[in-house]
Length: 142
Image 1 (cartoon, rainbow, N blue to C red):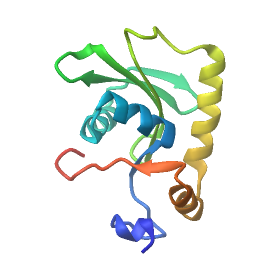
Image 2: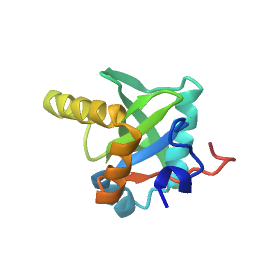
Image 3: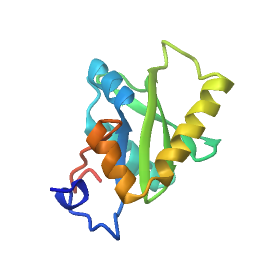
């Protein structure tokens, strides 16, 4: 079954998608950060709560750490077309790193732009080879 049909999307009208890079998913699992927390961050972005617009469709969004809150929590970097497609690219603990470098920002902007421009067919291929993974948001969270 095709991924867009499996998740309730038609091939022509994909609807909003929340995705993550494989490397981000590996980091997320190590930190025990839930998909629900990512979905909440996207929901906040849709309501206009963006922590930083870094340009080139790249955004910084704070995500609360279990038992800690946002101020001592995670920083996530994602590419987004608000209301359409969100791709989580990179994450880190605020205590581990103050911010990303200019070179990192440029690389993330480039990668994010590529992911945002993928067609339905190219997205399917990215899922099949494991470059991108679905972030599972239920109807109540998102």
